[in-house]
Image (cartoon, rainbow, N blue to C red; front, side, top):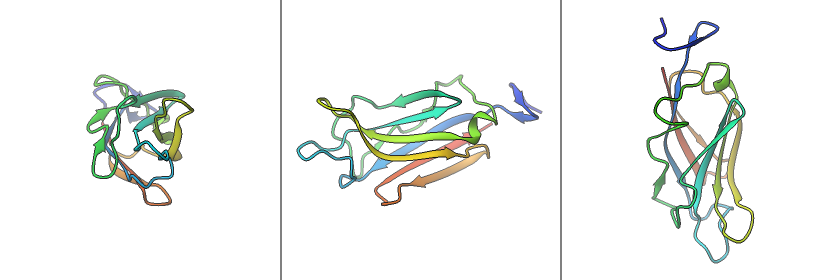
Length: 131
C-alpha cells in the first residue's frame, strides 16, 4: 500500500543523485579551463539541474552529492521514471555548455541504486530510486 500517490498500482518515488564523478580528461573539458561539471535530470518533461555555476571540480571531486531531484517533497510516478534523461554538462562562461555524457530513456522505476557510466568511462552517475 502506498503512503503517497499511486500510478497504475505503483507507489510514487523519490529520485536521488548520490554523486557524479567526472574525470578531468572527459571530452567536455575546455583547453584552458578545468571541467565545471553539473548534472541535469529530465523527468516527465521537467528538467532539474544541480551544481550549475560551481567551478573546477573534476577527477576525485564528487558533485551533486545526496541531491533529491526536485526537492525533498518531490516524488515522481512510475510512468515518469520509465524514461529519465540524465546529462552531465561542463558549464562554459563564453560559449554554450559542453556535453560530458548523456543517457536517454534511463529506466529508474525499480527501487534501489544504479550507476551509469559513459561509453568512454570518464563520467559516472550514481542514482537511487526510493519509495
